[in-house]
Image (cartoon, rainbow, N blue to C red; front, side, top):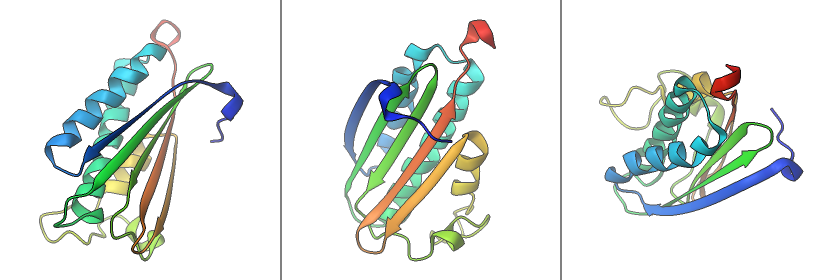
Length: 150
């Protein structure tokens, strides 16, 4: 899914520490900003779920046992699409293809290894860029259908 920068109608960027308490903040902030496009309840749920997974990945895998900064940018495009970019400057991912495999995790037995799979299933587009030692950028895209047209 390709969004044209000329069609961008609004944007917000937030920075927060990689504390688990900020996962719910990121989820709520993304949903609140996207609300101006009048998405359906299901679309809001999808976005909140994907954002939650992306931020949790940055906290658990990107920064592991250290504290760092996560940057979330939400962009809105005409007529009705959203792009959410979650960026960390953590340890990075050595093998993105392997990391995107269902059930693969670097987080131990308490982790499902389904984060990328969940993000992909709830969004219309997802890309992952990463460099070991430099961090990871997850870009999520969702086409929205306003409630009155759904």
